[in-house]
Image 1 (cartoon, rainbow, N blue to C red):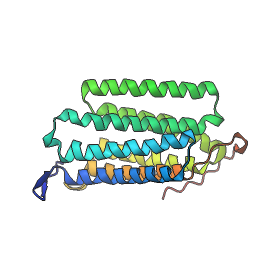
Image 2 (image 1 turned 180 degrees about the vertical axis):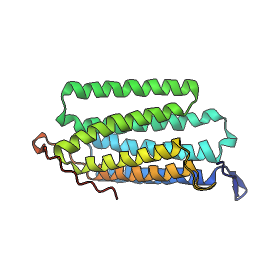
Image 3 (image 1 turned 120 degrees about the vertical axis):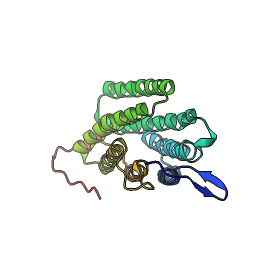
Length: 235
């Protein structure tokens, strides 16, 4: 359902709630970046996570302001920078998961994940730039979250019961819910359409990714456990 524009201080704003919910995601991501920056953590996994939050914050702010609120001032192609930055952010989250799992997997497998990570990023950026179709951004995000992040963090969790991995898995769950809302166009109201609802759930996912980053510790192979009892807290 298309949202009627509003006028604020003489400025027309298209899709106002969609813009606002995009900025909520940005706020969560920018806070997470600020926290990680202030924490002074310098290991690769923290660097990847820090810049994941920064780029995702920029992508959602750009998407909200240029892709929605003020698109009438730009051509449709101006959506592309936000899309590309969001793909870069997912790549960084994938790299963080690879780095987090690295002590528990072989060097060859870790290198394979890194190479595939770059190949799929460049491939989907090229296709997206050629087609100007957001569907390929969705496919890239789905692959990165559901195949790379989910599989690696689940492996780490099963081996070590790592608290950070549990939060990352919860984050992936909420990201999947967000995608399902968007793809099925589930809406409550003109001013709470599928864009708005998916953005709000995306903010929840970003919050859990932040909790994962906040509680992340470097995995020690000596901590490997094989117990299969699950005790996940979704809320």
